[in-house]
Image (cartoon, rainbow, N blue to C red; front, side, top):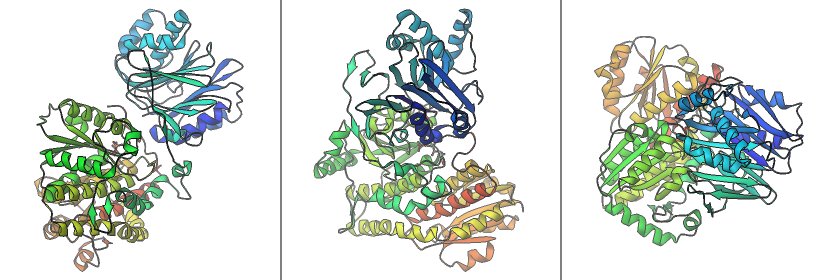
Length: 628
Ligand code: M6R
């Protein structure tokens, strides 16, 4: 979950590294540091807190070397502090690390016995010690790294250089992502392509247990057995501006406002707007490389997708956090529209619960980043049990995307705010389209029903524009929410996962206690919590669950709870019984959750912002959770 940048070339390494780290701060932000060559010696500068503190420290520093590495940290071993910040320097060696070395205690003991002077509480520094010892013996950084790797247990990536070999960087990946950025006379390495987009669009994605040896104007990738391997160079066509705030106060706000476009972009490749039908495009079952996927024949690919869906008898949807709430919605939609049995799992539970995976199972993983360690491990487990793996993710060429058999893309552009918003909504739109397509393939939906669903989906972007235009009312409601000691978010059916998501948004942004509940469950326990300091956020759009939801709302009111309700149109009843009533445009029951989540996102955003919290980088969190 840390961010790594390394550079070898003619530009000022300080500029390249800081530019890159700014784009990676979403990965961790408790401390940061750089190690850059100057007059043939390593200058290591680190600072506690956000990258800005490091930038301030670096402002008067000059470097004349061609090589450097930098890091922004999300603490695992050792509290956030300057001495635990990366890079770690041991002798000639400077190292940055992302991930966890599980056997660090044993290595620490051994190093202490040998008289090593250990300066931090991290597992990372120990790796620098091991490499330093080997480098002294071999006088070869690449060999030194190769020799110590068998000692390390865990999931981690490292990037290392040695002062005595000033034109070389060695990087290794086994778990957290690493990409090599390529230009004719300069080479980069980073945790994410976003860090390098201002410089290059050409990337090599490292696979697990691969080492890259970067030298002046050339790089070599070695596979797990130590042999050089040929890697595909992927050319992206991304504008660096996609990762700017573009006038919004925060990335999160920008991303919330991008949602109408995000939904349109997610659906665009898959909807035939002349026939109002769904033809999922380029899922690529059976392809093995980005190039193959790009050059697929759409008709053949659609035939293959239909075959896969026809033979699937059961679906498992696996994800974490917000993506898991999307999975809950996926279950509702696939079961109602495609009549296919679906199980859903939190990835960290699935991988350790000995799941029974019958034959003809398709596992659908949902992950914005495509790097979430638990989701990746769950996908591997499912594959090894014979399941077909379909990935729904935002980041192309991410680990999950690369390891899945089939690929659906959120297509919503980089999501930088740590709280997921536009990726969630794009996922919901795709799950809806997927369920409609599958329903048709299975014969569970008629052509007329398919058309009805497609029309409902096509209406969503403009309905979202309407919801966003009510932002000032959401901000007013948020102002009142400050008064309460706790929050119960409730809904039924497709609104139940939205209630969970709304509560998560409030927890992660405003640090307030909130629970998401199925409204019908309230009387089985949480009702005891309700008094006049408890706010009930009730999701009650006009759908088949409306009447039952209203009964639950009355139960909460009778116990003194204050209600903020979200419903459809000008609902007099809800207005009468609520402290605040927030209205949504009329929509189809299968798309209303795409609208109702927006007030919850914006209320959490405004509340957190009013309280002075950092909405883009909430405390203790990071965007891409590459540790289990
Ligand atoms: O990248 P992923 O979708 O796999 O991430 C999963 C969760 O870590 C993520 O959704 C997290 O819950 C967000 N902070 C929620 O806003």
